[in-house]
Image 1 (tube, helix red, strand yellow):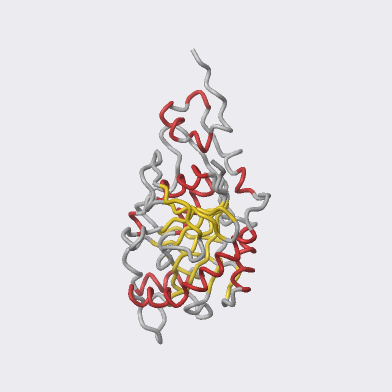
Image 2: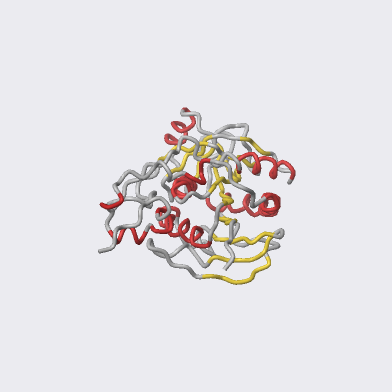
Length: 292
């Protein structure tokens, strides 16, 4: 089977892709369990694409319930090298208005209960994550959003909170004092795991609200978020299609070789079960064990 090099993760309100000529829906399993939903595979803008609804079709899965490892591993099984993520975020600054798009280049982690690495169980790896967004995808996203007519912001810090509740007013003000730009509940774990899987990752952060810090705006609610997302759905899909037209390309970024200098454990000491579960990620870097 030909590798599918482009993956799309649809967030709140983006449960399918207009224009995707569906060829099949594939149910995959991974050493880490099942992904959020079947992956929808087809042709979009002349490219083979795999689409995954992050929260499952019908929005059934809370942010902290997401099996991030299974989602990213499933893309890796298909041969995906590029992940285009779309997500809803709250604005932490006056200048980022609802319906704007921000393409973050940094993250701050405020989650508590989520597995966010493939490693452990006898195999240690420490990937570089100073620049957590792919340097090739970032400008591509900004360019595509601008051409789609969106008000787009190049770079910024995405604070990933635990949820599922929205922030308290005190938390919101503290986060603002840190200088973060937007707040969301999902993207950091995806970015970390994509880097470990040597997949390029970037996200379109669709601004839906002002969290609860803004004195002149209504406090964020689930219904209000979904209303803005539905207004923005056509723009989001337009941006994604424009990005797909430019992919795939030859990768010349650190994402493609992130594990090359990250694996610490002596190969002979890696437990066989761990080696088996992580074979898709690490076999090209670990020496083949000596057969008795």
